[in-house]
Image 1 (tube, one colour):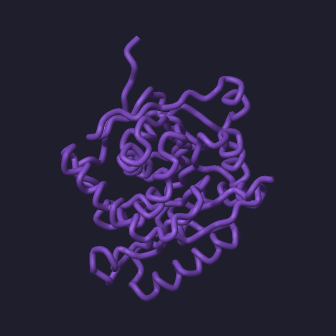
Image 2 (cartoon, rainbow, N blue to C red; image 1 turned 90 degrees about the vertical axis):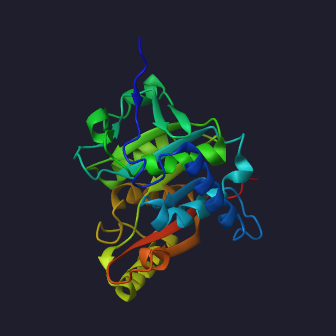
Amino acid sequence: MVQQVRPPAVAGAFYPADRDTLASVVGELLADARTHLSPPGPVPKALVLPHAGYVYSGSTAARGYAALLPARGRLTRVVLLGPTHRVAVDGLALPAAHAFATPLGLVRIAEIDPAVRASLPQVVDRPDVHAQEHSLEVHLPFLQWVLGDVEVVPLAVGRAAPPVVSAVIDALWGGPETVVVVSSDLSHYLPYAEATLRDEDTVARLLALDGPITHEDACGATPVNGLLVTARARGLWPDLLHRCTSGDTARDRRRVVGYAAVAFHEPPTG
């Protein structure tokens, strides 16, 4: 049987389509991000990271991925959740594929244990939802560069209440081999000063584990709110790694989009 591969949809738009150029861009973003990790902290169990084009939010996403570098070789599975922008769906959608393709190569899609999958009727197979969706794809080159040979569980999150999303996160939580990445930008198309104030308030709520967040405050509010439910239940502690807007990276401050990198850590054991 031929294994289905989901081809890149936004290479050449959100990030470079040329392999060498993409590797160079990701490498430079991560090298800069590492200079801000002083001293290196604990490796996060979960991250909220943005999904815009790399010229806009790549530097913020890199702050989160740089924090995973010490766990290369240990982290082998990424539960990746992002909002749907093009095709609506009830629940959370898998792509019904065996791998994603990027200019850096293939990223294998992890199989979910059949018993676990049977317990999650909110998870459906919908390749049409994934076909043109960018919120998950833009994270893959970072994951390839930082973690190497890693598997992903790619979930495009549609209409779902926070506890419904949280149940999926909990079922796939795993152990030290698994990290959860939630893809979300913050406010959209506000003037710079207004966006900064709104995003500061949203980040404060994330750091207080205070949900639910609205879709006006974060386009990925649905998966973010699911993570917040899990974070409260599991006693995670959050840490702001970086916040900015497209007005800081692309310089046009008339209508900006906000970005943040927030890490969530498990409480110490023993």
